[in-house]
Length: 278
Ligand SMILES: C[S@@+](CC[C@H](N)C(=O)[O-])C[C@H]1O[C@@H](n2cnc3c(N)ncnc32)[C@H](O)[C@@H]1O
Image 1: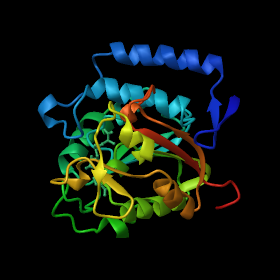
Image 2: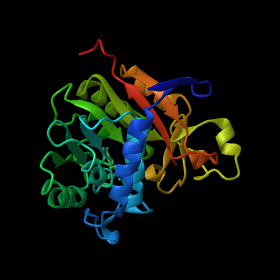
Image 3: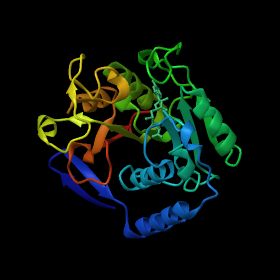
Image 4: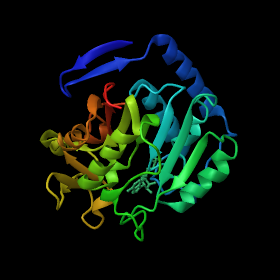
């Protein structure tokens, strides 16, 4: 692995060896051409605009190249939606050693995943959690800040939250950071996307969304009529919630939402559970 220090984010960047990268590129090309992989009907995709297959494949690349995902990892996908991240992972994770658990409050997404993914890949499992969300699950019984996921501690090597913290208030992100700390094995990694909003990001004409100050301290929202449609936070705030839970931040990769060059749209935080904590 090659490593270099990023002065802007104050984190260490690690690049996988060239052999691993060319193997991954080959696999990604194969996945891109494989029309037999399941995809929901476009009208059932409730996880945002854009190409379902292309975005899932893009994130497989980020998981490996930015998050250090390995084929043997035991993966938890918090807010797994309708399997956009899971489908390409079925081609990457080793069925003999790895497994994947996905949780989400939207029943239709979980049902589609069970019928179309678990059926062929029994080491991919999905479970509905009835956590309340004003847009995704308005009648949910569990308040997000009290979330406890139905898994034993230290069970996972890699936990992903893609485009989930961009829809949650800060106290719910904090609750998930505590759950992630409980659920990761020592040395395990969190891959979390967010909008980390610095003053200079608001000034760039090509930044999207155009954030407005939110009601809660340190929050930035795109649409006052639906504050959790897209929510960002003052740079440093999400990072401090993650650190307060006990995780170490190993990398922050800034996204092109702010109008800079980047391989990904949202910001990516990689955090690690210290090796000496069980
Ligand atoms: C924009 S979608 C992203 C889905 C998936 N991660 C992907 O990228 O395809 C946001 C997801 O977060 C889920 N969600 C909303 N509130 C949640 C919560 N409190 N805990 C877990 N997931 C939640 C939604 O149901 C939805 O599937």
